Image (cartoon, rainbow, N blue to C red):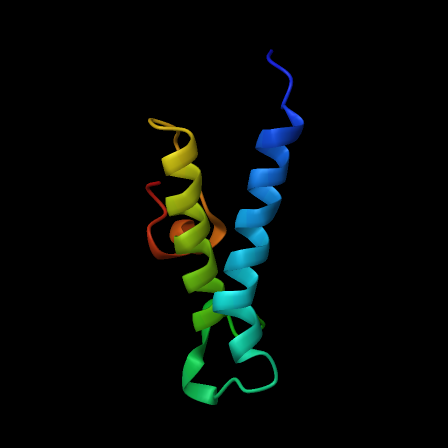
Length: 82
């Protein structure tokens, strides 16, 4: 197995930072009830921020690693066949 380079790791960390800045922080302490939904049970919730962050992170991972299979928690909740 190939080791992860410092450059790649820094790029991935930067991706996470940028996605948090764009998708998570603007909604922090400003979320509305219509931006929260139950997934499998009343105490298993997902927010618009969760879905948006996963979508953008998945896009960035796919760009860095073409052909990679990405399985995200929120995507699986929407489509269990993934």
